[in-house]
Length: 233
Image 1 (cartoon, helix red, strand yellow):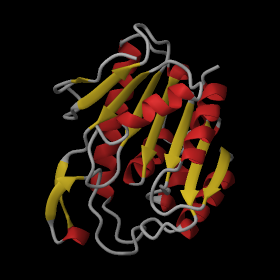
Image 2 (tube, rainbow, N blue to C red; image 1 turned 90 degrees about the vertical axis):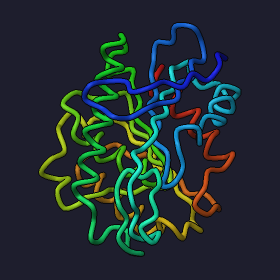
Image 3 (cartoon, rainbow, N blue to C red; image 1 turned 45 degrees about the horizontal axis):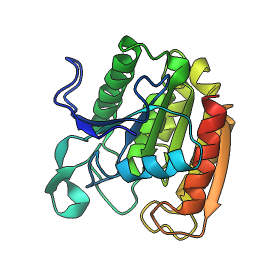
Image 4 (cartoon, rainbow, N blue to C red; image 1 turned 60 degrees about the vertical axis):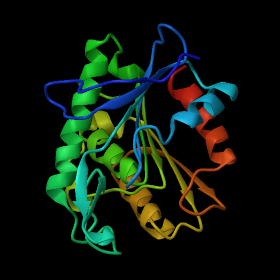
């Protein structure tokens, strides 16, 4: 597996910097993976080796750093965040402008992978927590289907607009949702409601529950490697 390669600004339409990891010299697939609140693009780099050991397909992994912004729920402290969180009920008083800004930045990353020669049918969009929310926000609005969406400990943001804005192409994509039953950051009830909303839109959701808090488990990584094998076969 190749060394991690940090990049600078990557596209005129995106201010995001990324960490990149190639699991072989010329992979035929790309996985764009969004971290959670307060983390950065390095957060899920160690998971790649675990996925490879479990037989996940070769890919270029792109781990963007979210923008730095003040986060209300954390006393206005500036940290990497895909959008502001304004209260304990994260689905209320949503930062619609921040969510849509991050959607546009992630869409620029997808376009960049296309220009590098990866077809949309070989691009997976993944994310944890806030990153999972942006995965759904951007993924549901794709004009052409991606290979798959992966949502770990996340939820559907701006749920009231999803039905009107979700494209037919997006509804055809497989969606992996994994969530901990003991999650106190993104309660499992919110994730279950998000799953129901996605199913109501006609999305093909694979739902997985684990006996974990707001984190990722070995069982989840094993299920994820299997899912990637199916999506990128």
